[in-house]
Image (cartoon, rainbow, N blue to C red):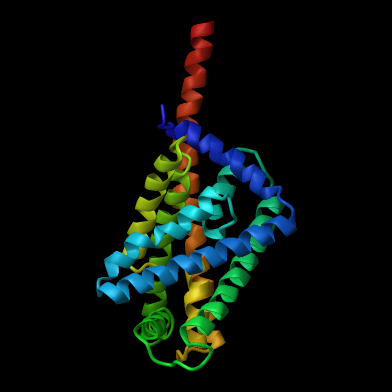
Length: 274
């Protein structure tokens, strides 16, 4: 059958997490940079679709293409690893130093790839500085400012909202990563992965790697955002929120419920054998 049971899927995730944790730094960097660039591609595709149609949900429908490519190519997306690597650690498949090594280098690689794509996209959309006004430029600037100075404008309450949106985002992103293991067919994986990713993007939640592209691109295109505002009012709290939800709501939760079932199955087997 094409469908993979949750117990088996989570065990496969633990094995995949072990493999990720043991990658060389050079491989993490290359795979992470590619992932950052592909997610940037998906983001500009989504913005193009929404500006052309005037309907934001259309952009959300096409955004999962980047996430799907990343998972099918087995690249390094740090936000997905926020659930996969903890599952591997909880199952005894990797160590904390290896887990932290992967997450740290993957974060850096995603940032580098995202910024490189932002530079290339800014050159294209501005015709190398000859165009300063278009619907897509205005869209990116507006989104970048809504992700930073709009939160800052309402102070502590803005930080709470930002953090909650980061929690809600990566709950769905990590579920999307898990869903890649719930099918044995490519089509099944694509459909399963796309659903939760569409859910987070359509509602405007905060994703650390998407923001590694959107905010720098917005700054390059003229958004009134400083480097400090990018990191203090988005990147740092969003990354923390993404990690917490990926670990608690997906990684730890799925480990606990599937481990209990596995233990019950082993106990029943031993009882029959005796």
